[in-house]
Structure formats: C-alpha cells, structure tokens
Image 1 (cartoon, rainbow, N blue to C red):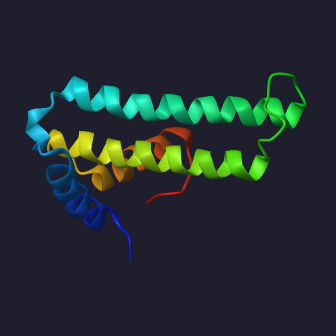
Image 2 (cartoon, helix red, strand yellow):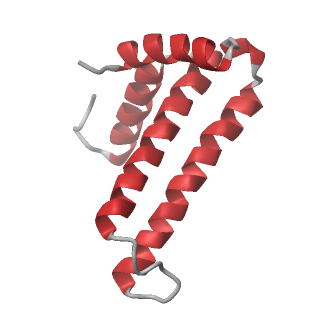
Image 3 (cartoon, helix red, strand yellow):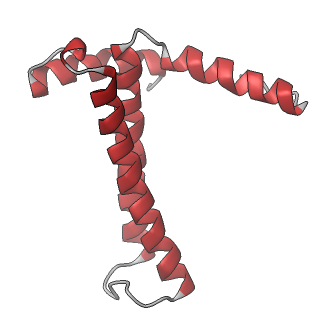
Length: 115
C-alpha cells in the first residue's frame, strides 16, 4: 500500500541509485525548480485539455481527451514525487506538512474537515 512513508523511503533510495546523488547534492532552489518544472508541464497539459474541451483551434485533432488526461496524471505524479524529494532534502515530512496545513486552513475557514 502506498503511503507517504513508503513513498519517501523508495523515492530517496531511487534518487541516489538513478541520478547518483544524495538529496544534499542539490540545493533547496534546485529541488524547487525541478518541482515547479513538473507543475509547469501539468499546466501545459491542462491548457490543452481546456482548448480541446472548448473546441478552440490550435489543438492537435489526433489528441484525445483520454490521452491528455493520462499525460496530466503522469505530470501530477511527477510533481508530487519531486515535492517529496524537495521536502526530504530539507528534513520536512510531507505527510505532517500536508496534515498541518490542511487542518490549519479548515480551522481558518470554520470547517470541521480535518486530516
């Protein structure tokens, strides 16, 4: 079963094995740039989806909504994976950070929804 602890353990191990460097061999800015690069790729796919759904010119007629959604899924996964490495490089638990921020926002908005 996938959870944040499993992702972190395997993600960091793969980072070292595949790229040959430790988390500390990139700066906080380099990890951030890599993460934002993946967000940018996801946003580009979202733009293409919007144009396709609105029937606007400029889209490749061969590209289906299903294929764009598959690409979007991949890019969202990429930025979560990079976000985990970015957080790991600074000793931040992604799970704890998300829980804390989600609950803080719920309280601020007066919602009972808590993680």
